[in-house]
Length: 463
Image 1: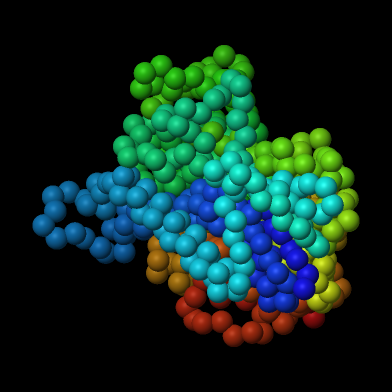
Image 2: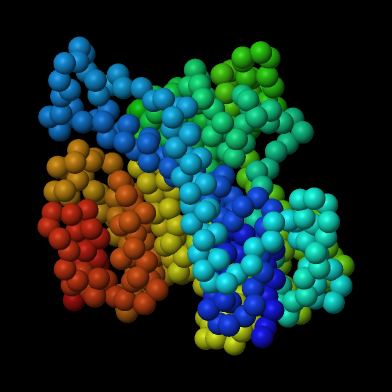
């Protein structure tokens, strides 16, 4: 029986464990903090739970337009509701713990052994696990998967204190509503937290070193998000690079490189991630890393060391839980001889959980404009959609990219409520090389937001 040892219990690790167990391997997962990893315990599940509350606040605050009034309330309740952040964060942490328990139970049902400890590679295809009591256990393996994830990046000039200067993993200990929140960093994490806390009724200033929010996303989508955010009261400081973050009493000061300062009661640092690859024995095992410490892997998750695979954020390939999970599965399919297709990043769908959401898949507008691929593009605003009108939705659009001649869909963008759900038919079209005509001819419900996807596809029909 093949022996598989997995270091790290996040999506890359636990999904790999399920596949390996299904294929008859003896599987051990060495995990430090609880299965589920940061995705479940401190990142995806907690943040999206917080965002779910924020979404409800947004819906209620805009409900007057739909004819909703609140009985026995003086004034407009839709604009005077407030959040109990202590209760919200208690629910967030409980849901994360419950999800971790569910994953652990499923691993147990699959016969996967979970060892609580810190794993490192040792000589001769072995993993040494340092247990909580300081003792060590040596695990022999035929294949090793490193799936240790990444951690929030910090700077010497911007050190979190866990109280008022926070990484995104520390925000769930807040039980008081910030008087004014400063978010440093306008990538996905920064934009999501800024959008969520704004919706919770908290004044937010977003400090962005770039010329626009979400510089890595579709430019049209970023423009919609920034317009909506500023309309709702967010202050966006673009082309403003942070030099330092300091605290004095209850006041946090962000100093910019041009000398300006921004003050608030709390600050969230969203400065990117660093891989958890230190002290894992990678160098001695012959596992190559890049200058930033990310493990180098190929499209079937192999590292430079024979028998050693890696998956997830520690590889820096595309830092999404879904990609980590697929990398882990691919590693096990490859090692255990099952059918496997190499990782194809052009089929990955992703979502930014802002308000509105931004979902993408496949080739991008930037790639088209820079000549990486020839494609025809159509953009259809959601404002004309009947369902959108019913729900009071005015912001957002559907954008599709097709290959000239064949009409095959190679990419798409959806901006709007629940874009994370609406992108799925476009994702299927990209994965299966469907044409715009094929997508257009599939029935959609009327009225529905998804009708705009079919309508966009119809507009790409060529006689």
